Amino acid sequence: MTEPLPPATAFAAAAAAANAIHIRPLVAADAVAYKALRDEALRTAPDAFTSDYAASVGRPAKEYAVRFGPLESGVFFLGAFNAAGQLLGCVGCEREQRTKQRHCATVVGMMVAPTAQRRGIGQQLVAACVQAARNVPGLTQLVLTVTASNTHVVRLYEQAGFSAWGLLPRAVVVDNVAYDKLHMLLVLTPDPFPACRSK
Image (cartoon, rainbow, N blue to C red):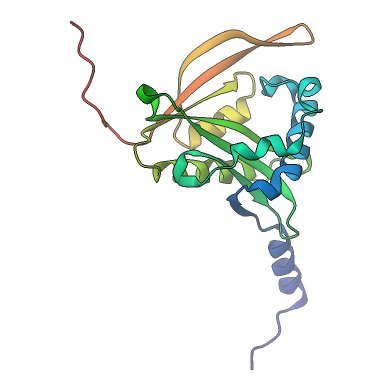
C-alpha cells in the first residue's frame, strides 16, 4: 500500500498542481476570454502594443476568432491556462500570405495577465510558439517587434533565440511619450535558400 505523503509534501504537490500551466491552441470558443485578456493588456501596458485600448474595447469578441487557425497553417494563437481553465496569457503567430514572403511569420500579441506575470508563463508561451512554427511546412523565420525599453521582455525573446537587427525610433507615442521598437529575428531553418548575390 502506498504511504500517504507527509502534510508539507502533500501541500507542496497540491500547490504545484494548482499552479501548473497548460498551453494549447486557442479556438473560437476562447474568443471572449482572449478579448478580456487583450483589453486588459492594452489598458495596463499601452506602450507595449501598437493597438489602442480605446479603439479595441468595443470590438466584438467573435471577430478575433479568425486569428485562431490550425497550427499547420502558421496563423494561430497559443493560450496558457491554469488548472481552473482560466486564460492567463497568449501569443500569436501570423504567417505572411503574400507569395514572396510565405517563408516569414510575425510573432504577435504576446501578453500575460498582470496577476500571472513573473512566473515564467511568457517564456513557456514563446518557446511553444517557436516549436509550433518549426513544424509549419515552408516557414523558415520568425520576426517580431518589442518596446526597446521593456528589457525584461527583450531578454525573454533573446533567451528563445531571437536576435535584434534594427531599431525604429519613436515607433509609438503614448500620452506624448515616444517609445522605440526593437526589431528581432529568429531563423528556424539555417541557410534555407541560396544567399543573395549582388550584381
